[in-house]
Image (cartoon, rainbow, N blue to C red; front, side):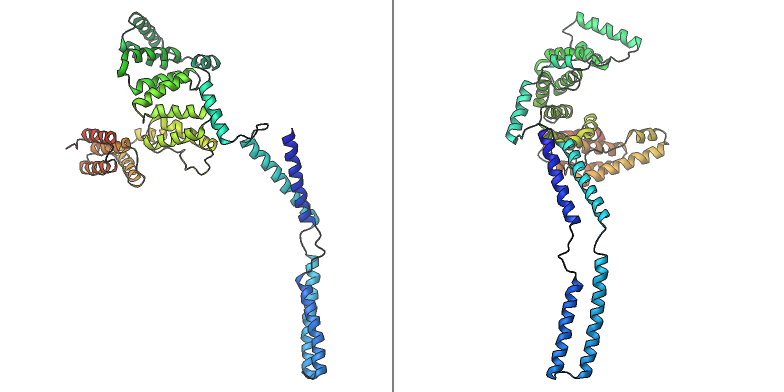
Amino acid sequence: MTFWVLIFIVALLIAAFLCFALLHNRSGEKPSAAYDLEVYREQLAGVDKDLARGVIGEADAERVRTEISRRILAADEQMKKGNAESGPSRAVSIISVVVIALILIGGATALYDRTGAVGLPDMPLTARLELAEEVRANRPPQNAAEQLATPPQPAQLDESYEALLNQLRETVANRPDDLQGQMLLAQHETNAGNFKAGYTAQKRVIELSGDAATADAYADLAEMMILAAGGYVSPEAEQALTEALNRDRRHGPARYYWGQMLAQVGRPDLAYRMWVQTLQDSPSGAPWVGAIRAQIDELAFRAGVFNAPDLSTAAGPSQEDMAAAAELTPEERQEMIQGMVNQLSDRLATEGGAPEEWARLIVALGVLGQGQRAIDIHKEAMQVFAGNSEALGILDAAALQAGIAQ
């Protein structure tokens, strides 16, 4: 309450100052015409002195008096007119004060409602960072989060699919060491909306895989746990993401969920950097790219980035474009594909892109029968990513797929 009283008093003081400035009667100020009148009167007196000393003749003195008198009349008329039109009316000034006061009070209230928190004490950056670390270290575990989360609605399954799923459950229960069976069970339980059963089976997949468990396996485990917790990234899910990133530091889904975890524990600044870098390294059509673009503006605001580039629009064809393409003739579809390939080529040439995007362009050119152009693009990409063995491997694989490998 004290805060709002203080805000109200400050707003009143500002409004009072504006009211005084707008309504103050400037009676002590002289218009410029008044100064002109003083000068002209002095000039008129000077004419009489010059005539008495014999500097000028009577005819010249009369002519000068006439001209000065004309100027005096004009200045007097101007001064009277200026006094009549000395500023806006009192009603207009009062209305202006009220409008300005409302804008100040309303704007300040709206801004604080957006960015402030009543009753929250001043918190320096070091304290904020320490609080974020404390939140991260002491946040609820997976089981507690699942109990607090809204239970996911089970998917409406076809009878035949549900029968096959029950049969798969029975088979896996009788053969718990069957890696392929556990993989299928994890996938289909997740598809059915049974996320806890899905990540339970995925844990068994990782156990059976041992050291051969891939980044995808750990990222899938984390995603299933996050879905089971209603979008919350628990410490257990964070550990799975850590294992995924240890195996592939550029794994797109793992980086997306890692950024989500950072945002949840109070580090939107780190989350924003992670997501921006992920967007730069990922193919434009990747599923996680759309999820990042949908949230990047809000995250930038939370991170205090107010000059962020527009990253909310995705490149590539939309669902409407794909639907329209299905109705085109083969010739029209070929022309549309060629246009998309040219657009991708121009963007990579001017803005650059991830190795996967260069690889997609090389493969597309090979499919279109433009082998020489694919070779040129491949050579250019090899120069761009020289020294990056992982990127060079992606480009060589694309060249092989495009039929231009040498």
